[in-house]
Image (cartoon, rainbow, N blue to C red):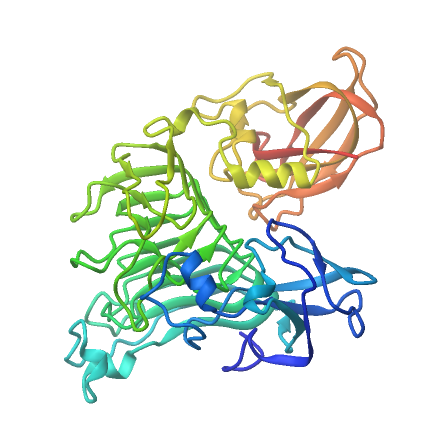
Amino acid sequence: MGYSPNGGWDEINGAVVKLSADVLTPTNRIPLESTDGFAVGDHIVLATSLTKEFIDEVGMSGVWEPFDSNIKGVMFSRTITNVEPGVITVDTPVRFYLKMRDDARAYHESQAIENSGIEDLSIGDVQHGGVGFGPADFNIPGTAAYDVHGSHFIDVNRARNVWIKNVSTYRPAQNTKNVHILSNAVRVRDASHVTLKNVHVSRPEYRGEGGNGYGFHIEGQETLLQDCSASYQRHGGTFGTMQCSGNVIHRCTLARSTASPFGGGGDFHRFLSQSNLIDNLTVDRDFFNARYRPSGTPTHGITATQSVFYNIKGIAYHPRRRYIVASAQAFQGYIIGTSGPAANAIIPRDPRSGDQDWLEGERRGATLRPVSLYASQLSKRNRILSVDQVTASSFEPGHAVENTMDNDLGTSWSAEAFGAWIMYDLGEDHVLSRIGIAIYKGDERIARVQVETSLDGMTWTSPVVLQASGTSNDTQEFDLPNGRARYVRITSLGNTQDNSAAITEVDIYGL
């Protein structure tokens, strides 16, 4: 899914304009020598070159060579939202420094596929079945590894605002081996604002070296992986290249990666990816590394900077590791909160990465507030109001009211009685705009509820009756009469299957 199989953000479209000052901190405002030729809505690239000074600064002297075309430099794909004399404003802050020393520049991005998606799809590769699947056999013509080397079943390249939803691999009936795919599953490269939701990949036939057996291979920006899983891969999830930044892995699972001495695990793979978030990841006989890699041509080197592991849960350790997360990033990296039976995290000292990374909350992930950094920031951005307390008329065991606020569509509040209600106390008055409600089994039945609001919890507004679509388990949003309220009460009016109440998530929005 992309504009062409080749080319990317380094493909210049039109004139190149240099920055007029260094950009040293995250910002939307970019100073240029000239804004002539730039307009609101233009898609641009902000780029630097791999200079000796840059290499020295990130501690890769003697490891990387200046202007190596395989490594390139830092690049950001952005959209212009405002133009002033000498300054443009872009939609998303840059996430690493852009220095004039490194030939910091801006130019128009080449064309990309936009607003496209892949949904509700199962893919299974017919197995190769041949011989020659050794770690380095991809280099040997005539081997099975040579034939399948570098293949992907979904490859997103030169794309923007695209999605992959409800996609899984499977074992075709004719496969004699338990094989789903030949080598790699999903790759995102030179693409931005990509959403992968409910995507599950497993069991490549080849898990050798040279870029094979990857589950999710992210080399783009502003990509969200949510409720996804990768199992039995060489690397379940991988971030790579300096063009990789601002990506989020949220509520995903990595399981049972390769048990080879050097393979296995999720990782930051090469060339200093910046400012990525791994949030509420479940690790089962697997692990995730953000540290120096001595392998590859050119040498991968220091792989990450300013990236965060937040609230990571370990089910069991990988056979060759006694930790679930390891972080030794350039400048600074963070591990905040681990939990589960396998909860060890390490921040090894490495002279190639500078100061030791930050670790806190080891084995105390269940106590973190907020539970999720991603969900917390999303709520603030969307003006989702915080809830001080939630109560209900009743609930079934194991289906308590708090389940409607845990950002997990797999849990729910439920009650058997028609007319059962759940009430949210916002702590103080707010002007409300809309409400989001996700229904349990919302793709199988149509549910009806009524919503009332109150300033004091005693006098209520006239009820507004809402009806879910019956086609989706996701949160559905409904407008509310704009008025001040502290309390919001949702009363179940049953569904097309029975009279029970079952709600998985509720979001209340303010103006």
